[in-house]
Amino acid sequence: MRRLGRSSSSSAAPPAAARGRAPAVAALAFAAALAASGCAATGVDPGRAQSENLKATDLAAALWQDGEDLKTFAMRGEATYKSGNNTNFFRFELICERPGSFLFTAFDPFGSPVFKIASSRGALNALDYSGKAYYAGSAGGGALGLLVPLPLSPEELLASLSGSLPFRPSRAEAATQFPEGEGDASFVAYPEGSGSPLRVQAAGGAPWDSASGKTLRRVSAGPVNSPDFQVRYGSWEPFPRDDRGGAARLFPRTVSASWRGNGEHSLDVSYREVSLGFTPPEGVFGLERPQGYSYEEL
Image (cartoon, rainbow, N blue to C red):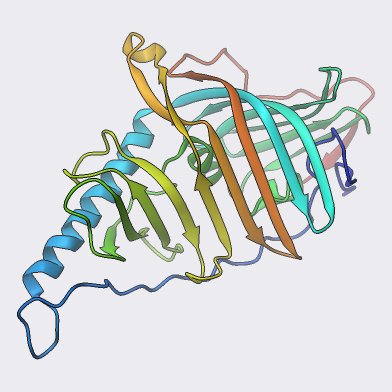
């Protein structure tokens, strides 16, 4: 399969493609850092440990459910991708329907599409306009990494872009002591089965059993001091939801990701326009092979 994209010091093209399976993310194992309180033998109050883990589990579940409640979102914006000494800048449009359907379009400086990726019902398709190539295959098994260098599945990508957790947490453990009032909460969320857990930092205060008014600051996988993959959130702003009669919902305005894999990589994304809770047009997540385009299997 021919590589997509081009790397340069300044380019309007989409990120260069990356071959091969993304490196496996190391599993996290964090113990709760709890303050000593009346248990002289161990320095841990069992009652407090149970209470803090309950808060972590409630907050992790609430953040995931809050993301699941918003099924559709779309945005236009700009992105800068860096890999080593190479930098690519591009403008894009993205239409999404969770859990894993999306249509991504990258534009040249004149506003014409140069690259498209569509994911829907387990299928992945792409169009390279400059190379006149059409790509098709399964969305599983790291196929998205053949088109863009992100080591994410479509479901993980949509969760990251919308500021949600990518899985329903089976349990969570406090990574630091929870604050009593306003501030950040840090916990480790574990998926069911053998998936890799995530370390999560969320902003907001009690009650911890509700995601209302809380936003993610950071989600990372791998070692604490040098994570293999990390997503950081900047500003969050309220946007109206079409499916809630215009009621406002907080949504990230800036998202930054960094990861390791054949070198150091980073992606900084900002949204100029955001739409939430709309009904997507019929067939928007499918791409047909244009006449004269070569067929490449992913």
